[in-house]
Amino acid sequence: MANQHCYQYPHPAVTTDVAVFTIRDQQLKLLLVQRAGEPYQNMWALPGGFLNIDEDLEVCAKRELEEETGISGVYLEQLYTFGAPNRDPRERIISVTYYALVPSDRLQLKAASDAADAQWFALDQIPPLAFDHQKIITLAHRRLAAKLDYSTIAFQFMPETFTLSELQTVYEILINEQLDKRNFRKKILALKQIEEAGELRRTGNHRPAQVYQLKNPERVDIIK
Amino acid sequence: MANQHCYQYPHPAVTTDVAVFTIRDQQLKLLLVQRAGEPYQNMWALPGGFLNIDEDLEVCAKRELEEETGISGVYLEQLYTFGAPNRDPRERIISVTYYALVPSDRLQLKAASDAADAQWFALDQIPPLAFDHQKIITLAHRRLAAKLDYSTIAFQFMPETFTLSELQTVYEILINEQLDKRNFRKKILALKQIEEAGELRRTGNHRPAQVYQLKNPERVDIIK
DNA sequence: AAACATAGTGTTAAAGATACACAATGTCAA
DNA sequence: TTGACATTGTGTATCTTTAACACTATGTTT
Image (cartoon, rainbow over all chains, first blue to last red; front, side, top):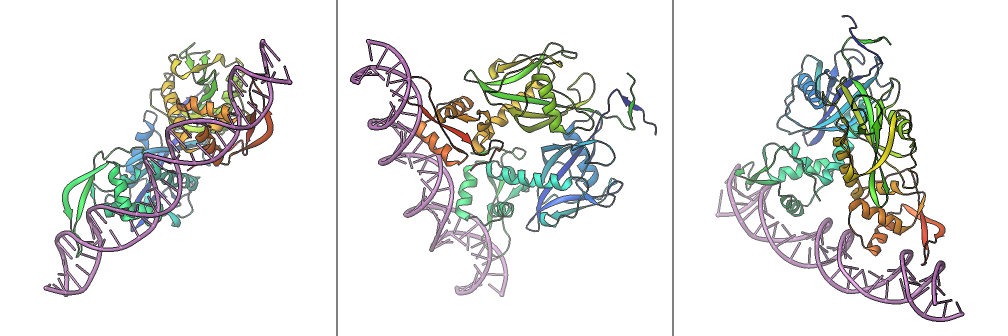
């Protein structure tokens, strides 16, 4: 194929990359894909790829995520734009990065054409990564941790319905410490973000729990 | 000049734009430049311009700011990356935006080659702007307001030395409400970010004030 | 029907935030 | 030189928010 796209001045390429988090096996996990082609062939990397010339940035991030991992319909937020001059050996590449949160009941993956494989990794077991992707992950994790304190972002890890105990477990995994049950429930209910779904969840030989759901499933609010 | 930079796939152009804030005349003000060329000739816009192919993003933002307004050495932070497909009539342009804070004693401007003119505008008197720059300003202002609550970013508006009353006035302008003097001083001193400079400032017919300075002038800390 | 296991609930103490008023000190003018 | 002036600098009491803490309720299983 000829180099038929010409400009008066040199242009960088633009990509999007996405750090997708979920909670699985009682751990915070991150989604990585194994690179099918050069450079960094066979190494693990964040899902992502080149921006189409008429495509919105966020649309690009969602498309690449879907193509490479089969995941769609997630909560997505722009993280940071990386553009160090030599971050890619092929040419100058600006990467607009996003982070995404997936509920734990929707993490079925497909190994798709662009990626030889896709897999969830615990955050303390990330393999060596292509490009500057480790830096992206570190930043994404820091941002997620910060947002827990002052937004309702953690709800984005929850399936459509859930119990307060399940929600508490998610928070405990995210902040890595035990919480008091009564205080937790008080604080969560005071947010007025969830409502009773009307059913009970019965699991095991004990009292069933009230099931809740988000009032605004798409929305992440700033609190306090 | 020929179109001598060719690629296999179409590439967007990349620019940086900067929203520079300062406090002047007891108001929060924003720096705008009048566009010298097309498109949007003579309209007001944020200072900014095209990324050189081997230039770091932040370096580009600082360079354009210096070239167009003469301002340098400011606190600069990445804000967001805008990339809607038709935000520029010439070609596809991705803009990596920053916001910057300038101390009120360093706001001498120069009208430079790239910009016919540069001027400070009160936030409620922003003229119609080129491109999607109004959106950028709105976002930058929101981010600044949010950061006041949980960081020491407001110190970046202060000159090298200042009194506690001067600092309080800056905070009052930024959050647009009066603060209690004793509580304000308690809270600020508890941050352990400033120290006595050892001199007194004498202005007017009244008791002189202790002069303070930042312990780490470059640093912005997250608090609480 | 008794043992089990998790759900669900209130109160007290500690810490942090807010409200509030007057003495101290240098300048200026009479 | 003295008194009026204008802003600096300081402490305490109250309210609000957060943190600590233990037992009863309810369905399941044996």
